[in-house]
Length: 248
Ligand code: ADP
Picture 1 (tube, rainbow, N blue to C red):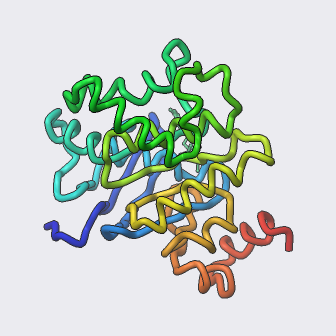
Picture 2 (tube, rainbow, N blue to C red):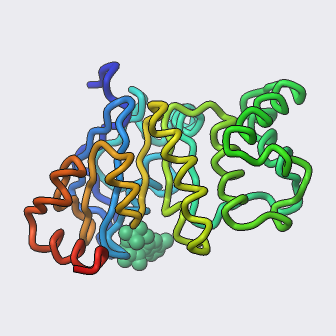
């Protein structure tokens, strides 16, 4: 069912919130090292889809496997998948009462059983990578939104995930902070991190993705490499969305 090339395999996935059908027969295979941008109108199920991948939401039918592990009710499987998938949220979700360094070392110490010293070394490595090592001893509330989001990325990387899931990582940021966060994600993309990024940043999609997937009303409507997706969208709904978002 799985092979070394496949990071995420989703088959015939259906997800309901009560009577509301949020994901409809979604099929998606993400290859190792592939960079996917998920776009589409608000409410189309993008966030729900990536939240299903690490079981922040449960699906009702169909299957998801991540790096060969089937996502079912087995808590060992869920834990294994969560260890391999870093997640970055729109609203950062840092622990406000912990310093930046403590935010970054908490999970490695508790979950990966790293020593504190080792976890701090790794944390400083990734804080350096997201270009804010000097903020390590501050609290999240003392940082700008762009800095907090870079901490959230560093925190996820400290768990050494093989896949990164980004849920609109720049949409809560002031415009002048968007590029500092996207630059970090572009660097990760260039280094070959497997990633699925929900975003409206079409410049990022062009620059850093291998495939753009357009969702509407819980379905994958269209997918293509960015050059093709932007120059030759096939479906009317995709054209309407791009017209709206790109302003033509
Ligand atoms: P997107 O990320 O594309 O904006 P979402 O995945 O957040 O879309 O939401 C898809 C649909 O599911 C929306 O109609 C939303 O209102 C609904 N939805 C999302 N989360 C919940 C929830 N916890 N309970 C009920 N409905 C939800």
